[in-house]
Image (cartoon, rainbow, N blue to C red; front, side, top):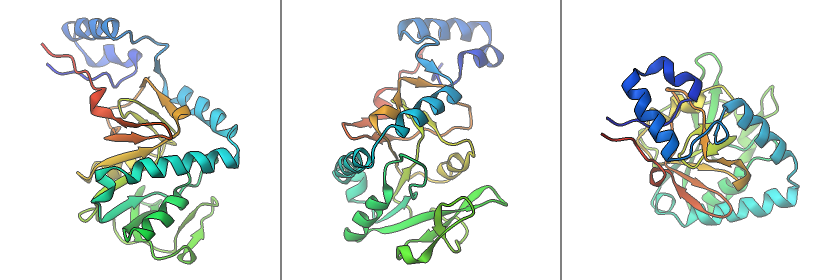
Length: 232
């Protein structure tokens, strides 16, 4: 039996029998997981929004530069020809606009997403310059148009995260768009985040997709190294 702690404690009894609950309880005790360390999504969002609001433009610029340097040293980045990357649009986010400019210098093919509100999925657009982007009704930069999402040529996906655990449990802004996208590709999935966005355990749902690595201004986290499945 393998079981990964990926659900909030109050949801576990609804999904497991008594035998499973015994294993889960032992797992929680052994790894010192409590309601203090297993944080609900809503609480994680509030905490990070507050923390990021305290960052100055200088903080964001310096942390972003360190993250780019760490990311660019990874084999997943070095050998990737086509990279799917979001455009930073929320206050305090890692500035991926700087990363996109950097990737252009490396000769990478950069794919950026355009939200399709009708299907609640992303269409794709091959980035060819900032002048081809417009601000949407919410004030975010995106392409004029996008084609149907085709991820067959994607070598790496740069994933946004509002909050994230060392196990790769990612919390976004609630739309679920990236969870749908990430399920369509086997390409490595790397989240960019500041240390202030990192938690030990975060409540997640069954449909949530974990990332493979997290790059912060201080370290690169390989999430599978933190995975401790319960085996019998």
